[in-house]
Length: 336
Figure 1: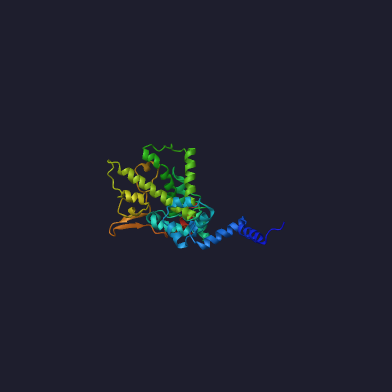
Figure 2: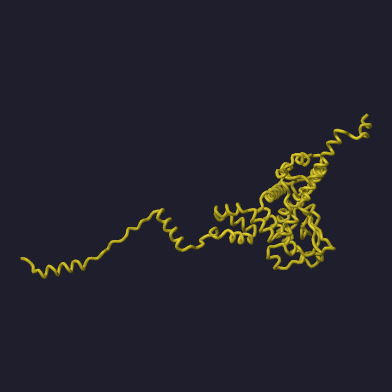
């Protein structure tokens, strides 16, 4: 039986109107599309997502106010940040030192590496075992300072004093807990060198060599020494029976992490602690400077003193060789 035409048209209209489009785009998931999507979003919404996305000048301003110990921590965050800090190590360290340790940098200058001296004649003179500086160093060694490696460190008088100061800084810092608690520092009998002291001296010498070679380690060495002096000044300030002259340091000065308060007039500290017994009364160790009364300021040993001492060593070696080749007339008569 054939349906009426009107009914057929009604069914077609119902069928066409009841269709629902359920098609959806298939999700495409791959590493390549994910990278493209993130890149597109980054261009669409530019934002600084990490420290290295900042402009170079802003990064340098931030890093120069960071303490050296925190710079070492930042080097462990990731490889990119570590590579950036190490690539800009000289500039970052110089900025940090100029901001925080301008006084200490003039008192504790870095010893010169022998490899940095280009003159071969100076090498011969500095390595001569007959020089008085080397003979005295070997005859009367310190118990708390390791002898420098002559093939590594310049042995002029200035550099030897700088080496001693560089080794004293970590050693003085090592015993701060003992001094704060009032515990005595172990006494080493004369003529002995226990294993623990050998290991401590080797560690101090290793730190000194790193500070000579790396600017960031040098800044860290200055930071450690400032912390030691702040603890010593605070400790002696609490001793009411100690009425000696000392630097005026407030708590904001101690928390600031800078050595600006050491620019004020205070006790002169030219003497080197010849033994650990001197640590008990030592507050500030700032070698290579003295107070100039008529100028009202501190005077520092010039940085080029190393060059002058090397010239003296070269002249002495030349004089010694001439004397050996052509002995004075009096010595010839004695031999005859």
